[in-house]
Image 1 (cartoon, rainbow, N blue to C red):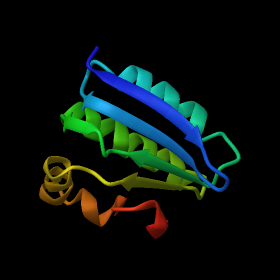
Image 2: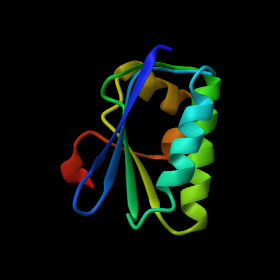
Image 3: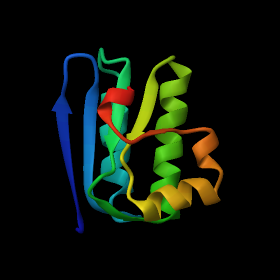
Amino acid sequence: MNYKIQIKKRQTYLVLKIAGSVTSSCIHVLSKKFDSLYKTRYETIVVDLSETIYIDSHGLGIFIYAWKMMEKINKSLVFLNPREFIRNIFLGTNLDRVLRVVDTVEEL
């Protein structure tokens, strides 16, 4: 297991912080986390990628899955402060056109 997941509650949003790599080894855990988080009272879920060092196609798939779940119930999924490598993946796959990516929580 080369990842760590933390959940922090803020007044108006919830933060899911992922440290390490988002790969096939963690998609089941992340899927369950997203399933439980999108049912909460929070209208916005922030995925903090500041300590995420790698993401593969499985990781992208779970992010798209979570985004679709949130969209269905008119809630927001926001990706916070991804490293350049991950930001380039979002750009290269055109996911930056669909997913909301911000650099700071002030942009929420």
